[in-house]
Image 1 (cartoon, one colour):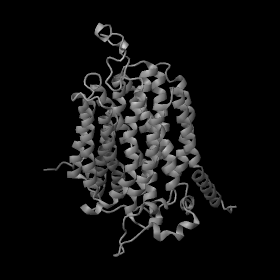
Image 2 (tube, rainbow, N blue to C red):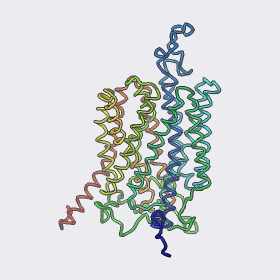
Image 3 (cartoon, rainbow, N blue to C red):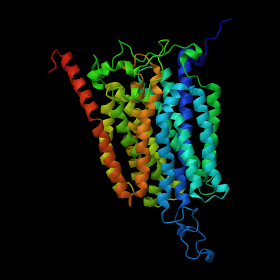
Length: 499
């Protein structure tokens, strides 16, 4: 009796090695973990337009018990004329704590088991997110309660990014890193979208659930992390990736030109300070100053400060802006604002593909940032002229704004955290990631604060445009050297000498 062939599905499974299955599993897990982090951050931007809204347009305003009180439907203390200042205080309670804590988080991440670190961070994030929502049910109207919850949440949320990037860096080598991490980094936008949609379901009826449900989700992901996350390939008998290979060459930047871009003559003199060893000769965790000595860390960190300022201003204020200028209800404004994150997904993937093909991480960021400036100007002036225009401008602006942000925080951070000057020391990745993202988080704190202080939306957009231009200027040196490296390589291929 003839036997049937192996089913196609089983053949597909067999086509992947054990190493590849573990790598894919780790990539999906870390994607879901950081999706839940962003999912739990988003509700505050959706709920703002419910905490303070136009009460005159609500049925029941004619009730004589309200008198001439135009803020009868607002949630105190956000019913006062200084409500934008109070919203800015909430944003910065989270963001300033996040920025400060991020610099310390990376060093903890290098010295503690990542599985325990992430688990604790997600469980505590779930707790403080839910406690913010319980303010609705406990009828709390003190601004200090909500500020304290934001401060606590900002601190524990710093556990996420350095840990997940370090974990992915432990499993994946340099090949196609921009594409893989560009797709993987869509967790930021997916989390924002899901956070907006979940919060939008409850915002008009019981806004407390807009926080409690995301808090429960991230806590559940913390439990999954404890049971399933594998930090290192060696822990399950898999082959560790090669971060550097003498035969591995970027398409356009070859023959040492990448090293030329990032290094300076003094770097080799200080090698011993960059990659420390313990008494047994094993690599030990890098210091904060040692990580700053890695070539390129400072430039990309400062660039991210301004790029993240723009991204987080949109994250915290876009639903309120859409509600104000397009006169939409909070749920509709929150739903439409997710299109900015949809554009961010495409922008992050596109930036990864281009930077992989050209080898020019800095140049890719520079081009997208310089294109974003006029598009932001255009969005401010025509982005309110009908729904199709709003949709198109949000997707385009989202791609151009979040593309460089995604590339720097993923592929660039991993490149620098596994730089050749570290001589194989893998214990720098979390610290380098924390420095880059921590510096960016300073901008993330400044952007929403300034947006709350500025008197009108035009000034907010001028601030965002200026920030994009400054981000471009900070990458100028690296862009120049990347272009020079590409031109030099082309000349050598044709037999010319480099002048």
